[in-house]
Image 1 (spheres, rainbow, N blue to C red):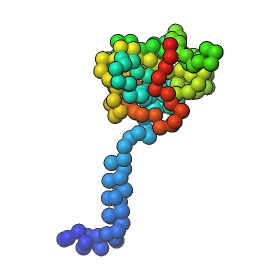
Image 2: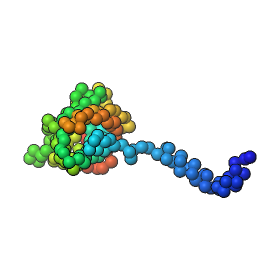
Image 3: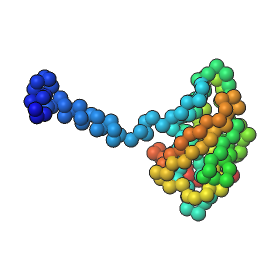
Image 4: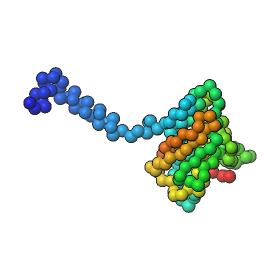
Length: 175
């Protein structure tokens, strides 16, 4: 029995079958960028990404679309490490007169039921600074990063290197 005869016998039309095959193919070939988040207890780490490193530099930055504490108890990000860099520092951006500067902080506070800003941006925002990169970060690269939380423990995430989409991102920082 050929395929057309089988389709007629079961009551399914060729259009129905081809439509299903098309939808399945699209689902398989769609990039998984929309599901790039990690959960650790009440913490949600949404889309960790790094920006491509600048030529001639040995530093890079890691940001998050969101870092949410959905629990009723505060936590703190107290450390991070990755094989791509000699060390990872926790940084906060602050205004110093008319100049935006970053400074290393011992921890990033995660109050209960709050989202903390770890994106490109202005005063008060945080990011992770990769110091002593072992090789340049290029658009499309991926690497593992370990985040150490005071209460939630250690969580390994996969960081995607990508050029920021918005025009407000500055690839340079001043110390």
